[in-house]
Length: 343
Image (cartoon, helix red, strand yellow):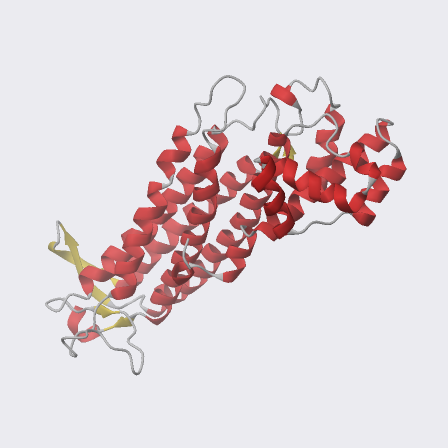
């Protein structure tokens, strides 16, 4: 992700500070559950909450030596908690922390994306009512066919994104899973009630059958949903790009005062926002394939999925968030030329 196509609220979800905060909460909630079971002293769980903190720079420093991010985090945490840190992470494996954290981050990201779609629906609904009786020429194969209305075009956009809203809600439900099942997922060294406690504390559901990782078909379905939404963004962008062509010019992206269209041709008013959206949609769709390839891990787990998800998790959600916000702005200020569109 690059700052040009990123919005701060979504970016914060993927910053180390938020990630390590979630890691800490997973470990601390697990300590609470272990203390209730009598596996560790209650005083230890209380100390973890009271003294537990971390420093991103220190974690990075330790990781350069130990070559393991979770161990680096736990080492830094122990520097603050003291001797009772020996009770942290008992019976757990790294994937318990990493997978559950990713679920939390994706839920956080999805809540922003859901709000983005709802904002778009409000804008496109208003435009549909505004242009309800604005008659225009319908096209099939790009050729004049029969009359329709601009209001109907906007209504179609509304219906499509209402479906996308439902798809994303379902994807959120499927991805909101927690796994605290220990090595190879057998609960041999940790009680299932610990998983239940952590899941409830974080607003997740327990993974019914985990291996050492949460099954990646969940993630594949999630990123595929983002890809479908991106395709809907591109469909609308393509419609606007065609209608803004000089020989058509039925609609036009809003051109703000002082805006320039070309360094060589000052008369140009190019559809730069919708062209940008077309490119961003290609990126989000591209993330779906590696997510699907992550499904086939070796046996109970490997980490071939890890490097992929460290990239596509932030990039897909940050990019789609930006695209949805931009699309909403385009539709909100879209200029329509009634004289040009009358059949």
